[in-house]
Length: 302
Image (cartoon, rainbow, N blue to C red; front, side, top):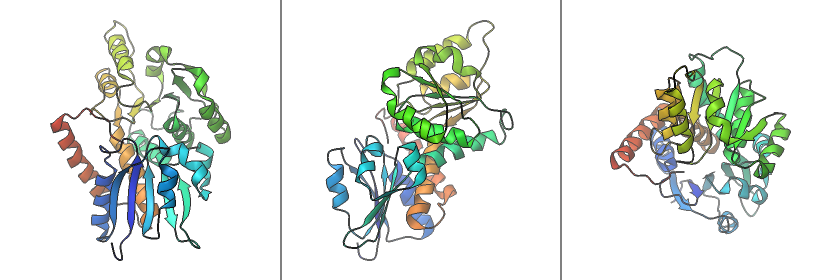
């Protein structure tokens, strides 16, 4: 592609990623007619060879699971936020001597903060001292802790299935200066409805049982309706069972597609040097999601 630049989203599986929709819409709106953005299926084992194959035409990479932590040891530089969080979802490819220089960044934190802020500026907890709950203990949970800290929540409660498998998250929290309380997810349905902010970082359908429990509690006589904002980073199906149960119980919901949109807009800015055209990207995403909804495709998307 003479005179153009390349970028791609990497992950496994990757076929249902909506990142190409967002980035291609951004390139069109910005007049970057020679830029190209693809989805490439890359496993953890294949990642080192793929990075070694990059040439000067590449501008950057978007990373989804399971590559956000695997990539860290393969980079030349890591931006401070990504290093503290311990998760890289963006790789910037820059000219170097002999081979490109790879720098890791994290735009998930920006995406979470911005998606929540859209509701918090007008919602019921816009100015209150906020409490927070996080569902899940993986790389996105670490980004969520950083985002919540930016929103004034430095002592969130983190709900996980296994307290013996959160060493990485605990170390990330320590680096951030955040002091979460870690508890079993068995108690989540009884507790999260009282939090000001709730972020589910669980994969698609992993919170379905919790959704059923919340719906059951909402139907109980005297049950307190949730007043806090829920952000479910999953958006397949749309709405997710958790988001639907939360909304039916009376709580405000932020769809995971808003996080996807804003983290992608920040990636566009980092890769092109120009602000991501959020409106154009949002319109393209809405069209793509309408098509997905119409097809009722249950497969997970990155």
